Image 1 (cartoon, rainbow, N blue to C red):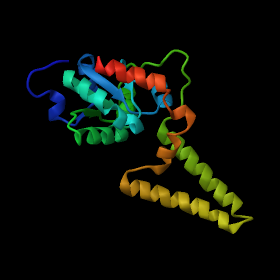
Image 2 (image 1 turned 90 degrees about the vertical axis):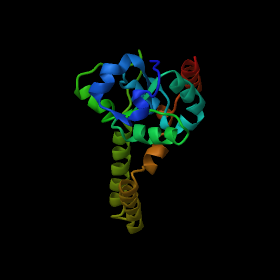
Image 3 (image 1 turned 45 degrees about the vertical axis):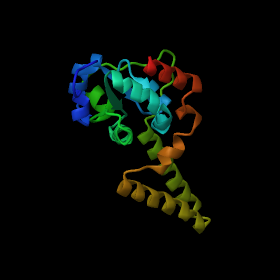
Image 4 (image 1 turned 135 degrees about the horizontal axis):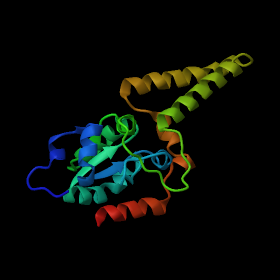
Length: 196
């Protein structure tokens, strides 16, 4: 993990699943998905720090980056790219995994699952389910109460805004649900492991 001069990660912003697999032993992998998504399958040895806890974890991540290369991972690569940019603003070099765990699994690479952990849908699937349910509810209720159609229109507008800005307000709301929140003890243990 230790190298002299500029590390390979400080010169690049992304690694493919094949590149990451070849270097896995020398990388500190940070999975920025929710704990439920992480439990559904993560890269071997990955630490879970949800994206919305990244700022609190910055000191531990800076410490870990000082000892070796960081690789940020999510399901598709979007959240890990956001995390990489946020860390770069604070002088912490990291790479993200192009295509995320989806690309990793498609190449047939191993994933780990905590014993007894309950798998949770990926955040993108949770968003699609919630958005679809709200639109359907607005349309069905709109048959009796026309104003209820505003719910469907509001969700549609939110999805358009999400696509244009590459952000997702609904994902931020869903990330606050209990099954998507880390236990304080789990997050503290992760941060402690990264500073050792």
